[in-house]
Length: 79
Image (cartoon, rainbow, N blue to C red; front, side, top):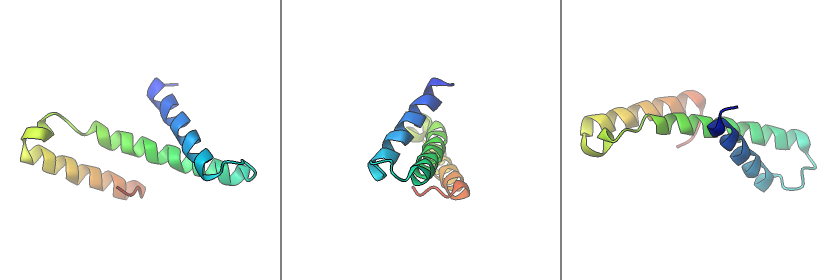
């Protein structure tokens, strides 16, 4: 597994444990973990759109904002 994906998987696991710490409801825990994992992947994809040019170019920044909003909306991830 890609190191970045593995890291996101561990982050999702930690987030799920914060929400469902006792792990009594394993189905709920798995659902939360899967949702957090998907959100983290989508956020990572959005972040990959950022370039150094976004700091200096209004057009680049505008494109970044437009495309990141489009991706978040497509996957239902709140910004």
